[in-house]
Image (cartoon, rainbow, N blue to C red; front, side):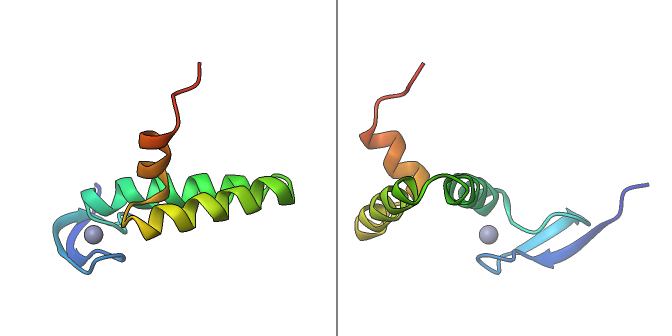
Length: 80
Ligand SMILES: [Zn+2]
């Protein structure tokens, strides 16, 4: 039996009702956290050059009040 409980989102603190026990973020934050952290942590494993590029784009994105994932989606054409 999965366990559900009410607990706050680890990112925005919004109360999640009947959240699954392993759920850390509300739906809105889960998307952001996944896209940002996943992209950045993946990039960290690449070359230093790629890392600095990610940091540069991330800084630009923050300056526009966007997340990294959102910024890239808007400014770079989709590959493949
Ligand atoms: Zn949240």
